[in-house]
Figure 1 (spheres, rainbow, N blue to C red):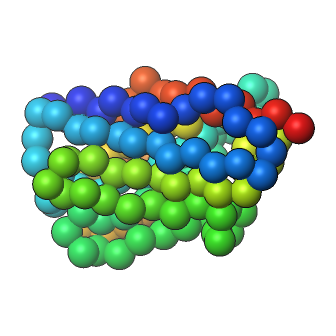
Figure 2: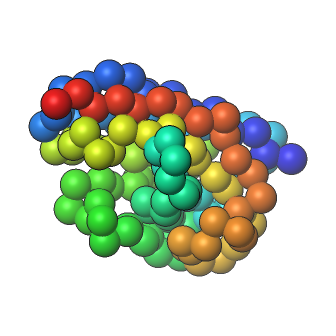
Length: 124
């Protein structure tokens, strides 16, 4: 079992930055792929970024490429999402997820571990 805990959400003004963290416990994540997703009220869950913890590559959604960056700290069993130049439309609950996989994937259906989510609110 893998338990995921997100942190770092909050209220920020448009144009600002936040860094989300997702720390895993229960298993070492060296063979896992970690992903970040978000869901705004009334909208479907949206893929943002993914990284394979064992060098299997990274993916970023076109919608956030250049503004959001995923990174990892294997020693801390933690994955980060650096979010810059935030916009009001980035307001959502942000989730991290994990799957035992050798490559990064945007397919939410493959992820079998999910965190509880952290709220990000961007004011205009």
